[in-house]
Amino acid sequence: MLKIASNKRHTFVSNKKHLKMKKLLFCLFAALISLSSVAQSNLKPIIKNEKSSFVQTAKTSTTTFQLTANENEMESLKKTAATMSTIKLSTKKNKSNLYDCTLVIIDKPEALYVQRIFGFLGFQYFILDGEEKSKDELAKSIASLK
Image 1 (cartoon, rainbow, N blue to C red):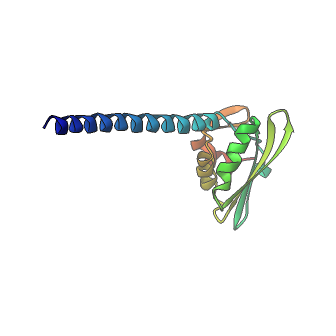
Image 2 (image 1 turned 90 degrees about the vertical axis):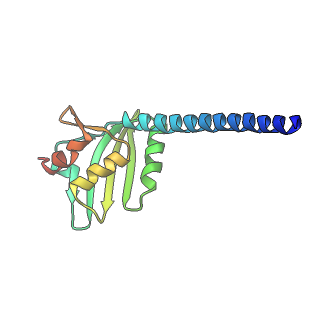
Image 3 (image 1 turned 120 degrees about the horizontal axis):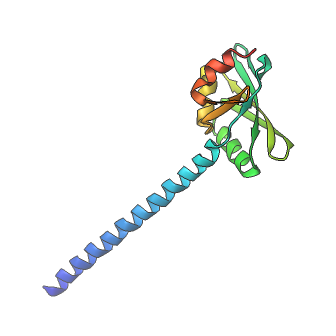
C-alpha cells in the first residue's frame, strides 16, 4: 500500500514539474515573439509628400518610402513580407542603415489595404513631412499626397 501511495505522489510531483516546464517554455516563446514585434515596431517608414509615393492602378498599388534599419531588421521585414503572396517588398540600401523601399500590393490597390499591410509588417508609426503619425492615419495620408 505504501508503494502505491508513493508512486501516486511521485506521479503528482512529476506532473507538477512538467506543468512548470510547459509554463516556462510558453513564457520564453511569448517573450521571443514580443521582442521580435518590438524590434519591428520601432521601424518608422518615411513617406515623401509626393503623388509618386503612392500610385494606384486597377490591379495594384505601389507605395515608396525610406526606412532606417539595420540588416537584421531588414531581413526580418523581408521574411515577413515574403509570407504573403499578394505583396512584394523590394529594398535598396542607400547609405548606412537607410533603405529605399517599394511595396507593391497586388489585387487590392486601396489605401486602406496599404495601411493594413503596414500593420502586418509591424509598422506602428510612419513619418510624413517630418511628423510622426500613427499607422491608423496612413490611408487618409497617402490618399491626399500632393
